[in-house]
Image (cartoon, rainbow, N blue to C red; front, side):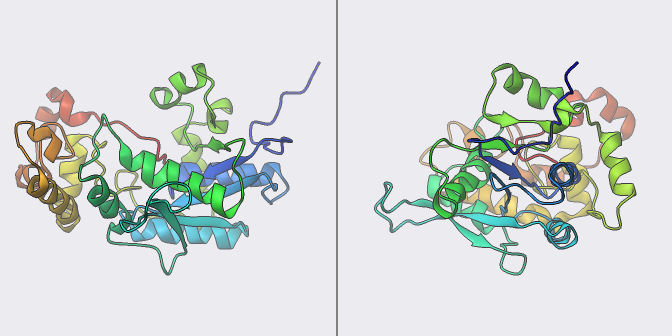
Amino acid sequence: MGTARNPYQCAQEGVRFLLHVSGGRTSGLLLYRVLDAHGGRLPPNVRAVFANTGKEHEKTLLFVREMERRWQVPIAWVEYVYRKEARGGMADPKNTFRVVGYETASRRGEPFEMLIRAHQMLPNAHKRMCTADLKVETAARFARVKLGWWRPRPHSILGIRYDEPARWAKAIWEQCRTVYPLVLDRVTEDDVKRFWAGQPFDLGISRDLGNCDLCFMKGRWKLMRLITQYPERADWWIEQERYRRSVARTVRKPELTRFLLRYTYEDLRAMRMIPFEELERDRDANEGVSCFCGD
C-alpha cells in the first residue's frame, strides 16, 4: 500500500510556487508547515511573498517580520506601483511593483490609493481589482522580474482552511493553478487556534480586523463594529469614495462611486449599532465574504 503524499511537500521538479503570506494566522500556519515539510527551509522552487496594500494593521506587519526572524525564512515584501509617465507594454510597464521591508512598507494605503487613481474606479464585491492587482499580479510581477520565473507561470499556495468551502470548492473542481494544502490536510479554525496557542508569539489582533482593516468584503455588522472601535480607520475609505464621486462623469449609477452596494463608509460611520436581537434578523448585516487575500 502506498504512502499518502504530504500536502505541504512542494519540491516538485519543474513546478514553481509562490506561497502567499497574507499576514494572518492561517497563512502563518501554512508557512510553518511547508517549512517543516522541507527540513526548516523553503526549497528553491518555492518563494514566500507578502503583498502589502498599505491598509494592513501595524501588528500584521510586525507578525510577518516575526515569522521571518523566528523561523529564519526569507519573505519577499512587495507593493503595487503605478507609473503614469511610463509608455506601457513589456519594455516600460505602467503597472509594476517595488520591494520593501518592515521599515519601508506603506502604512497609509498608498498602493491601494495608487490603484484607485490609476483606474479611476473603486473595487467592489463583483470586481475585486484590489485582490487581482495589489496581491496576485504584484506577486506575479515580482516572480517574473526578480526571480526570472516567466514560463511556466508559478502556482499559488494559499492559506485557506478546510472549513471555508465557499473559498476553495469551485477552484479545486476546476483544477486551477492554486493549491490549498490546508484544505487537503483538513485544517480548521480550531487547528489554527491550537497551533498559535503553543507558539511564543502571535498576531495580537482580532480576526475581524485583519488583514485589510475595513475591507468591503466584511459583513455590514462587522464593519460597523470595527468603525465604532476604530473610527479613524474609516477616514481613508471615505476619502476614496469622495475621490470617485469627484471624477465620476455621471451619478446615474451611484453604486459605482462606493465600495459597498448600498452604503458608503460615511453611512456606516453614522449608523447606530444594531442590538443583537435585531442583528439576528438582519442577514445582510450578519454575512461577510472572505476574499483571496486569506487569513
